[in-house]
Length: 315
Length: 315
Image (cartoon, rainbow over all chains, first blue to last red; front, side, top):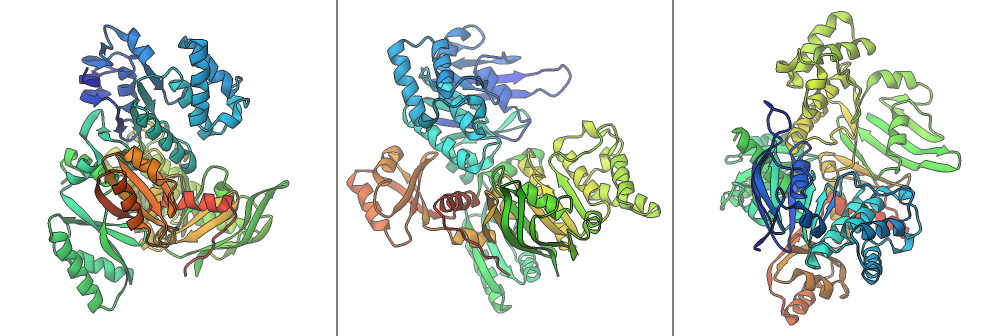
């Protein structure tokens, strides 16, 4: 088995004569990596994850998960994967420990294994101090961590997570991603969806999704490399003069304000250095106060926006 | 004149300080971002600034009016838009704007022209006769903005106004906000997304009712202790385990396929590189990167927990 997930030409149409929720998606996921399905609300992320978790059938296409066809042979898949939907049902009246115990029982772990796995889950979700706390009284971030523990308690080889970081504060969000990278380090393949572009950088492979279609797939480094422009950051005062200088500078493809800073799209391959130099010279001549003038990293959001614009045909 | 002046503002609910002695100001035409997790005191602060809740202590003036003595003057001069903005779903965009125009007392003979102008601004021209419920998220958001500024407020409050909107629409939305700021409108925005705070001129980070940081995004990032380094190496998991306990390493984490290190600013790099080489880990690239505002926020929170507040606003 080469791929943990091999999905080909997946389409899903919920209502006839309307645009499909998913339109001919193909993805392959090798074992042992963290794979991100990244896109805004309504892109089709949840539908795709449901199909790959074998809880929904595609209208067209085939999904092979852990060697089993989700259409013909879904039962073995369900024992081998952990699936955490966006609204994972914890039992609010049960304690942290009791929730883990319940999910271990569902998956029929034997007593010795169960004890070891629950201890392990408590350790790595950092919930060991809270075993007796009722799940209903946990904070949002802690609930997500407990849900993650419950989805992992039966030691699945594939973990599918639908927007685990939505609605949690930055501290919990960071912690959740650290936990996920630990899961991957332990050899589990992880497929995660997120609307946050910056989280794409935390994945080994990313597919950007928009309107039911995959815009691009690759590693974060490959995706950034595919951008036909580099980005310069300029912050100088007076601001109005900075804008007009940027406007007049030859070679600048596009610019937009971000706070007090301007972000400039400039062509790759040496051009960017020349433009940087020209800006520096010009602002120096005008005796402007230059706080920032440098190359900056292209973000995953830059990549996504570029892909959407390309798809729309606006660039 | 500053659009907003807040001096030693405190708001108690019984014994609990929801807002605890905060001070800041917003110069005219500037965009101020108020950040913090749920329960930090952002909403209470906004309610007080909008004149709908009284402070327990401290002075607050908005557009030159004291919110305690002239709350109605404040209310009629500000615009407010939130994620849960109340648009009327069974009215058309034009009817919605007309409705808010009458509530805010826009003179009757000016209304038609103002509506036309706002429909153009929000790029809703093709959708004037559609019912609001059938508009997509991004259109509804722009319509909500149009309604919030129908009376040409000099001060605009945006409360989580971009939640759930795709990156392309979010950029377009901020373009609109910048053109308003360019006309002299001052803006206070709250957001959960740390990256969005980059759009603001000044940022106030709130945590447990206190203002734990107050500066420009640039300044906040520069003041972060340590240097962030991104390493591409052949065995990232092992590298993290090796480096995390070395002296001079403030943090070491997996970031997708890469390693992120936070190093003391005192030139520990050679030692780190040597440690990696001794362990036989091959470093493909070593890059100093700009911290994100999320890095800043997490650092602020951990400093706050160990008692080391930081507060100063640039003028």
